[in-house]
Length: 282
Length: 294
View 1 (cartoon, each protein chain N blue to C red):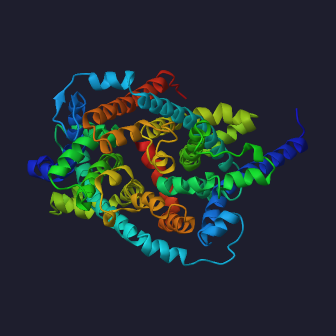
View 2 (cartoon, each protein chain N blue to C red):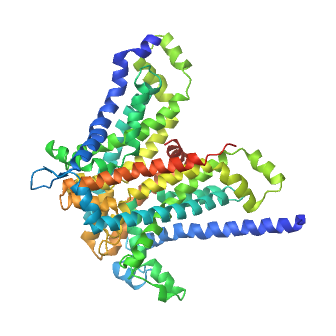
View 3 (cartoon, rainbow over the protein chains, first blue to last red):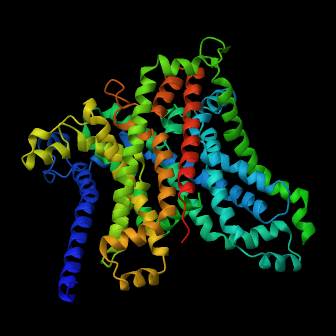
């Protein structure tokens, strides 16, 4: 048996150890970012001389340099465009399909859901060559529109899954009452289903945003004109452009990361919940 | 009501758009990929049926394929071990009675939502022999002898990469465990504590069995993620030095879109597809076998 005092002391040591471990771990995340930030404000020769120090001259010009010469502004604009377009269509179509699969009555709905689920397990690689060959024929290669179509198709399965999970748990009474009042099914969808699904739609938004905003492989294959690049592809071309001129590259990585960090800072509770929910439902 | 819910036009209106996208861009191309994998086909010569030749060639003549599968397994195993152990540990610590839970959760999690390209570039800088943080740090604490050209030496490159993967995603695994632990009603832990279970014993007898479903989910996620792994390798090493860090997705990418060997590339894609499906089924089977009721 341990005395209460001894066990108290043990708990305190335990807590101190937990803080120490979590603190050291946190440093492994914060310090690299800080280092990136500091080096993004130096002149390249100074990075080579002493990557640890504070900048001797604060080179704010690295940022405009990456932004215009490095074309980060173009990439950022393209990423925003692609993500916004994909999200809009994925949200609308997945909500419609999930509504139909969970609330409307038709025999094949179970099978259809299963059919869509296949897409959830399939790696995108298994579609690349047929897509590339056919998209070339249809002049959809090197087209942002073509790539958006692919992003939409691959965003749908997980979105439908999350929304179906949510909608099955929603009772039908509100829908029935609306129909009694003379509302059509389309009205029910717009005025009832969409509003009550807002939290699930938020989850879908987060999952799709993270997926599309960061996507590299498809963008690499389906975009060849530098003016159409998204941020991930654009960044991979940065090292070719600047080779050993590190400072603008540090700045470019910072610029590319900032939007996500800001969004995460604002919505972090929702993002954490959404990402966990998305994974567990899947 | 019933009639409205069964109306064909309504059903078609809501279902068809999504299904059309999915069928045309996801489902049908998969079937074509499987079909093409039995052909010899590149950008110049016409398609020619070759049976299983592509697959035979893969396993007998393609050293890069063998390396890529080895690397994939290496990534899968190390990621599962690192992320499960560290992720679970962090989750237990964060859900214990400490202050600053939210801060730690966010700090550990945020790399999971940042693009792998940015993360890969950051770590390429960190591993850089000239300006890198890691060699600098080792020199500073007097361990200069341990300095390496991390990404340029075959012996260290895969370890360097798998470290970055775990750095980026351990927070994700942690979040899944945190959610599961917080879902357990507090009384269960309280009553266990009153029964004298503390520290490691509490974790072993209570927490681990209760988060069991998450062990399965995160194992599937980590495994599939490792099998499909592409971004970080592409950014950090492009598979080098001398193909020593190549992975199946990268091999498939360069065969298909640099060397334009569509038939062979598709065979590689089909192997990747089969591996993903098999891995998912195997993991489900393992966990079903040992499912326990509480």
